[in-house]
Figure 1 (cartoon, rainbow, N blue to C red):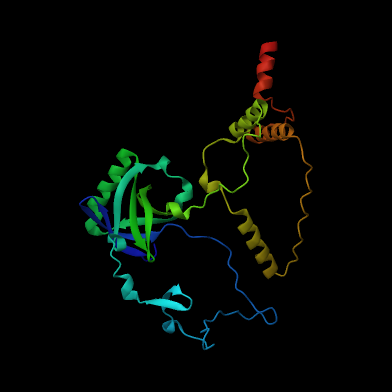
Figure 2: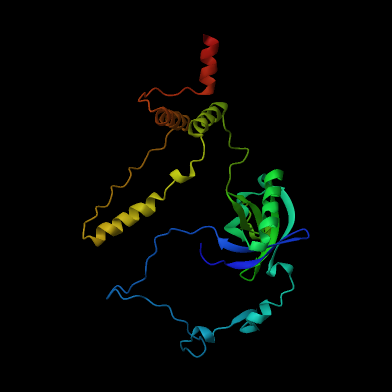
Amino acid sequence: MPRPLWKGAVSFGMVSIPVRLYSATEEKDVHFNMLHAADHARIRQRTFCSEEEVEVTRDEIIKGYEVGTDQYVIMEEADFEKVAVNTTHTIEITDFVSLNQIDPILYQKTYFLEPEDLGLKPFALLMAALRETGRVAIAKVTLRQKEQLCTLRLYENTVALETMFYADEIRSPSDLAAPGEEIEVTEKELAMAKSLVDMLSGDFDFPSYKDDYREALLDIIKRKAAGQEIATPAAAAATRPVDLMEALRASVADAQRRKTGAGSEEPVQDEVSRRRAKRAG
């Protein structure tokens, strides 16, 4: 496990639990260096003073908050320690709620909490309380000069802290084009769509999902490094628009074949057709 990103305490009523905070995730993106096309030398970013047009070093850079055109309030590191909130060194639990009350759009990033030696017993008590009540804790903590709203919930053998957006940070989709009452969905279409959902339903097998694009891209890089020629795959043929019900029937039939391993091309009947067949029989 890497070095902790933050050290402080979880405030649980009058109970204080000293903890360390670690990042719980790491992205596996394929990273590239920017090179000069002429000689393949690395492109370097430099910091310049816009007034003097000279390069400056990191120790010459300070933080300023713009209050007017070219007018700034200069902030030093000591100023940030003077912010009068309790969450600078404390994860302050304020509420306990049901997890299903929180929409996933609110989540930002996940961290793991690890108790200090003195916090093992109260940390275990917090975990037990979350487990027995089926709740998650709502809290606040200051990270990277921002007071973050967050949840604390059980994850395997520890507690995961997930930072969240505030309400005024969530954009409204009200201006997006969306189907209204004028778009009618028939019973047959809905029944067939539900059949497709049923055919594709199952348990979430998380480890089975892989980043196919990343693996294919790394394979191309490996083959190019070995001097191999890589052919461009043929573009997928444009599909003609089809009737919605025809597309649903074909989708359900394909899902059924893949689920059962059967080679039958016989389409699956929708719910309405089954009812009619039952009445006719």
